[in-house]
Length: 259
Length: 267
Image (cartoon, rainbow over all chains, first blue to last red; front, side, top):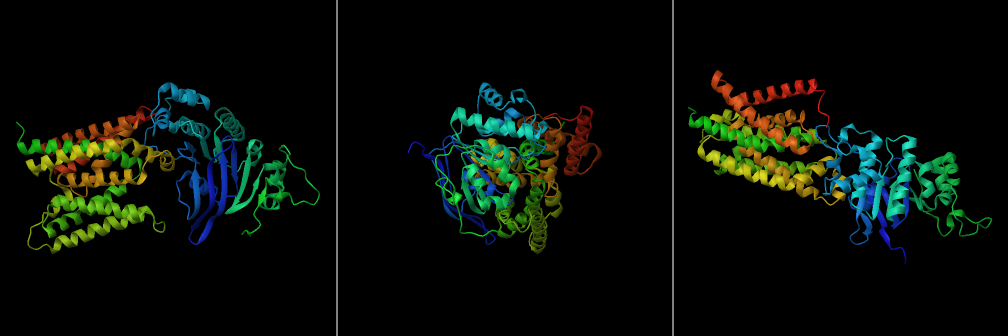
C-alpha cells in the first residue's frame, strides 16, 4: 500500500440523449504516475477528465479523490473575451492570491518569466498553454489534470511541454491525468494508458496497449509502430500463444462492440 | 443656480452610473448585452404586476427581473434552443405581455412613455434615497462576488475546479442586474437602460489595462455622460434620458478614435 491512489473512478457511466458517452469506466491515478487517456474525437476523453475533476457528475459510478486532494487543472482551450483586459499576473491570481516572487517562480518553471506583465491576449497558443500550466502549478497540486495541453502548439513546442510535465512530476511527485492524442510524444513516460472509445477498450503500459488488437483497429498501424518502439521494463515473460492483453498489467475489455 | 430637480437628476444619474459601470463591464466580458436588454424589457411586465397587485412598482420590477433571470438561468441548461434565441423570446414576449397588461389597467393612469424612456428630471427625494441606498447595496454585493465572478468569466470550468461557487455567484450577479434595472428604470426607461450598462464599459475598454481599471473607468465615463447629457438637455431642450445615452455614445466614439491613434490598448 505504498501508493494510495490520488483519484479512483469506479464504474463511471455518463448518458446523453440515450447514448452512453462514458460506459462503466474504472480508472486510478496514483502519486507520481502519468496516466494518459487516448482515443479519437468524441471518445469521451474530455468528458472523463471533467468527471474526474468533479465538474460533471456521472450518471452512475463513483469518483473518489483522496481527502483534501489539491488539483491543478489545465483546460483544453481558453477563449478569453478580448473585451476583458487581463495581464498574465492577474490571470494567475484569479482564484488565489500569491506574492510576486511566487508568481515569478511558477512562471519561471514553465519558461514564461518574461511575460509577467503581458496581456494574455498577446500570447501565442503555446505561451498561453504554459501560463495555464503555471496557474495549475501555483496551487502546488498533488494531481495535475491536463486536457490536451499541446493544442495549438507545434511539434517542437509539444515535445518541450511534455518534457516539462515529466520534470514537474519528477520534482514534485504529483500524479498526472493527461488527455492527449499526441501518441508519439506522450508515451515514453506514461505509466498507464487508457484507450477510450466510450468505454475503456484497453489499458496498460504503452507497449502492451500497442499490441492490443482493439487499439490497432482504432488507431491503425502507424500509431502501433509509434507506441511499440518505446521500451518498457519487462517484469513478466511472454509465452508463445499467450493472449497479450491478458497479462497482469494490460487489461482488455472484450464485452463491447464499437460503432 | 441649479434647480432642485436638476440636482436630483444629476445625483440620481451619477449614482446609477457608479453602479452600472462595473456591472456593465461584467456584462460586456460575459457577452450578456442582450441579457440586460431582456431583463429591462421584462421590467415593463413588473410595472404592470406592481400596479395590478397594488404594490410598489419598484418591487414589481425587481420581482419580475429576478424571476426572468431565474427562468433564463434554468432554460440555459437545456441545449435545444440557443441562448440568443431564448433571450429574444423572453425579451419581446415579456415586453408584449407587459404592454397588454398595462392596457388593461383602466383605473390608473399609466405614463407609458415614462416607463419606456424614463424621466430623469422628475426624480423625487424619495426616488433619490432609493437609488442611493440601493446603489450602495448593489456595489457592496458586487464587491464580494467580484473576484469569483471574474474567475468564472475567464474560464468557468477552471474556476469551478479551483473551488469557485459557480451557480451562486452567477445568480447573485443576475440579481444585481435586475436590481440595477429596477433602480434605473425611472431615470432612463426600460428601452435605454442597457445603453447605460454597456456604453460606458465599452468606452473604458479602450484605455483599461485590468478588469478593475476598466470598472472604474466605466463609472467615470457614466458620470461624465450624465453630466454632459443633462447639460445638453438643458441647453437645447432635448429629452434628458436620450441625451445622456447620446453623450455616452459620443464618448465611446471618441475613445475608439483615441484608441486607434494610440495603436489601441495593449492589454
